[in-house]
Image (cartoon, rainbow, N blue to C red; front, side):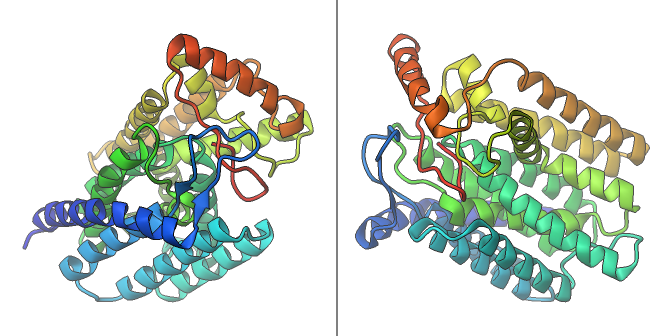
Length: 369
């Protein structure tokens, strides 16, 4: 079967499996107690189940493995995906120290490198290994950080997966296009549950970390023959919104002397929310912006345009857009220094404009919702 036919089949199969698995995972999470409780300044209406990531894992792998086959390196990728999902789910249930999580993510990335699922740019092998570990850890944590409002992480993942799938269709490998299409189908089926008011299920760390890993791996797989600058810039564009959100937020916190790993409502997504007044519209904007950057990456890699200047231009635009959005005053990231008072303001905005913002759990391992 041609690659595009397999991709379409994977998209449909992943959507069906995830659509069926998501409410079941919500029931399992309620039964075993993996829930996000509305304590302190969290304002969702009641305990909300995690395990959305497990539903996406089931959908993605149920579609990818039968359709793409189990040739190398797919078994290792599937195993690492399950491991990162388990790690994040454990963190949802019993929070782990941040550096322990990052060390585990680095080990998983190292396994991907050993399995020949890492970078293969025109660089020495040890440099590709270091880049693989850094890229996977960056992507998993960037998606974890952007999972601060309902739908934002999944919307960004859908737009990234579409760009990766289009590039993969131009290549010779089958499994990357099948996996990217499966991720797209899985998150498309998950989003209606997550964007329901109130949300019926959350991605949790298990889901955000999983999406980051799957997209990091497929991005590396579809850019194997590129020069190092073009490959790295194109990959950054394919995941630009989560990466920019994390980078600009952490840079702003450092500039203001705020602990980097403190939860807060000072992300790019929260600024967009303040402008549009709707979580669903914020998720749509995140998807649209990521689609634009994915299109620039596709133009540079697939269309025959000069890849290096196109990719560099796209990255420059991404940085400029991020800086523009993050200008102006924001709520402090320190919970005791502005976040709680801001909730009263948000509640007043909700009464007047229908604002749907909802904070979730905070701490050194996950941002406020």
